[in-house]
Image (cartoon, rainbow, N blue to C red; front, side):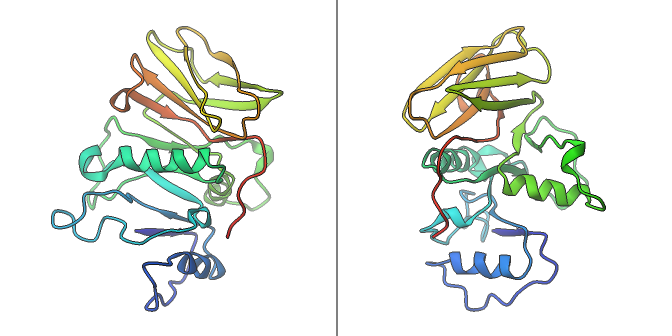
Length: 238
């Protein structure tokens, strides 16, 4: 599924080429879509969930603004969330500027569950006169400023070879912060009782991913994924 956020009127996509969907993305943006992304790309698909798996071939995924790394409707196994998260991470570490978001496809009133949700920090100074909250959030998606979390929230900033991480609340016992860099370097830091953490990066790092875990650095123990970190030039849209 391709989601065009901010699009007011649907375009004619009868000429869609599944082997070159980049043209569809460009047409959606030309028609007014603010952020175009891909939802549950690795969903189990046919015959269980016909039509839900991404069957198109993106040769230039940098045309996308975001990937839905967690779909909370049918569980990780059916939604293919781990594969979607890995795809997003691979693209970020290739230098592609792309945001991570979550989504839900339930056709009933949602229930409060322990699931991943999309967050972004919006400062008063970032909101223009007459600009709606939705418009600001769309801007932050396009600027890769979103994070996904089951609860813990944190912000990060790169400065002079160091990444400074600030947690909204002090880390609880057993929490681990993982930094993966495009250079191949990987750092895991315990965050027990600390709200501010500094990690020295590898020389030449241009992009990185931050993830917060509970006790083990495993997908099933994942608590939050921070906004991607970019320090150098990124791949331009093809």
